[in-house]
Image (cartoon, rainbow, N blue to C red):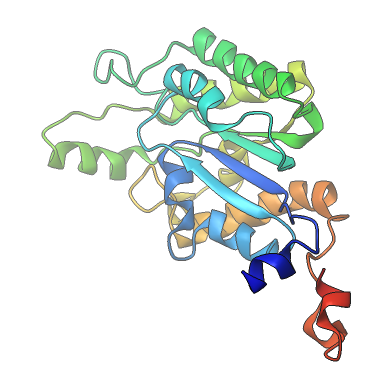
Length: 241
């Protein structure tokens, strides 16, 4: 009771948040050396980094669940990443469950941006991320091990990446063109662990590229609660409440 009464002396602290919304590359981003974990480390004591990655999902499914994941709330959402396309760009004949036609993919991205705007998350707080390039030879081995044929092509993934960039231009959001940036180094294989998902180097690369876009959006965020040396130990309530 005494603790509850003490806490009632100060206003409720609400951490701002960054929401990472995407497929498996986002879901895995909090693993060791993951890009989401790196982002959370940079933003500790400033805002929460919330992982809403959904392995295997495409934009057709993502747009349906987004309103269940992000709503108007007391917590301030200071940034949202939308990172889909690796599954949408799967070849229709070989992976019809995950495949989404290119035009629908673009429309789904626009739909999600429009929804976020409807819950007061403006364009300047949204970052689209294109799928990374696909290393076909390595991903084919993964497919064959499961009794499947190669079900994705890098050139097709590139078409979806270009569509993602165009949606960002049309809607006025920021965009991280991972597909193009990773291929500036002609041998991009070191960025990928299995031809599709990110390696440690790929996670580090994405974290650095994303931070360069987020830093200007989040640089004004203050540290929450005072540094311990600044707490008045003779009267901590004065500092903490």
